[in-house]
Length: 116
Image 1 (tube, helix red, strand yellow):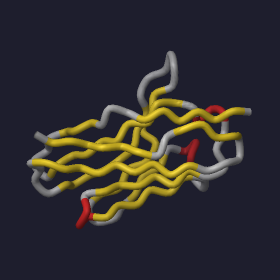
Image 2 (tube, rainbow, N blue to C red):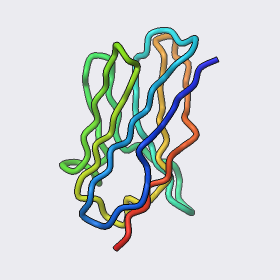
Image 3 (cartoon, rainbow, N blue to C red):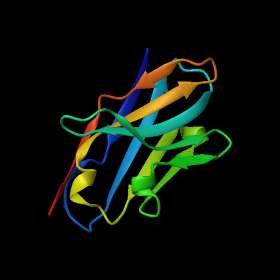
């Protein structure tokens, strides 16, 4: 069993900050990729940010310069620092982890609400 435990969602005013964390535990081989996706009501799930084991990062254009993703390989943890939040960032945020064997794992999601 592999578990992804997410934390850090909540309600914040526009312009504020939140920090999301996700830790993978259980019977998981080495992790290759860790990332965050989000899904707003009525919209498809989209990539927010991702980071490879080697530290290469990718960001959605809409969050570049505002969000920062980082990971701790020793702790199997990925963190998303979200600054200058906007109402359009409101969504359920999902942690995604891909093992070196290519197995995909998803968290249950954490709600981020940004009020105007």
